[in-house]
Length: 113
Length: 114
Image 1 (cartoon, rainbow over the protein chains, first blue to last red):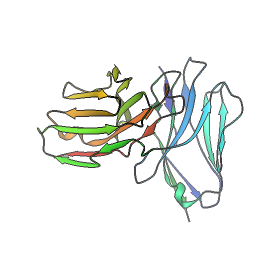
Image 2: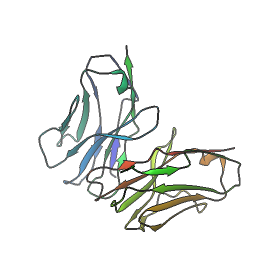
Image 3: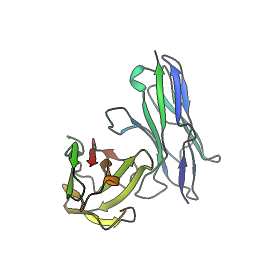
C-alpha cells in the first residue's frame, strides 16, 4: 500500500525560530512527486513546496525548504524565521506516480509570539 | 485566473434533503478531484475526473453520493438523501497534468446536516 505518515500531530515554535515537520512515506514507485500543503484557519489548501523524486537537490521556496531522503523515504519540511502567519495545519502528500494525491494526517503548527 | 471556484461556501440542511455542491475548475486543467475532510478521517479522495470522464470513484462512500462533470468547466457532487454523518468540508481541486504540479484547491464547502 502507498501511504504517507505524519507522526507529529502538533508542533510549536517560537516566532523567528526554525521548525522541522516530519513526513515519511511508503511506495515501490521510483518516479513520483512530493508536496507540502498549508491549511490556515481560513481552510484554504495552499501549496507550499514541491519535490521531484528523481532530483537529488532539495527544493526551497523562500523560508521553506525540504530535506528529501529518497532511500529513507523521508520528506521533512523546514520553516526558517517562523512568522505568526505560518500557523496552520501542514499536510504532506505524494502522487506516487499517478493522478491522485495521497495525504498524510497533518501536523498542526502553533507559533508562539 | 480566479482559481477553483466552489459554491456554496457553507450549507446547512436537514437530514433527508438533497444537497448539491458545485465546482468550476481552472480553465485548461484536465483533471478534477473531489475530496472530503473530517477530523476523524482526514482528507479522503471521493472521485476524480480526467477530461470530464470519471476515472476512479472508489472513494464514494455510498450510492447516496453521485458526481457529474458535464463539461470542462463545471462539476457537481450530489448527496441524496443527506445524513448527519455527511457533515464535513468538501473540497474540489483541479490539476493540469497528472498531479505533477500538485492540485489547486477551491476554498471548500462546509456542509452541516442536522
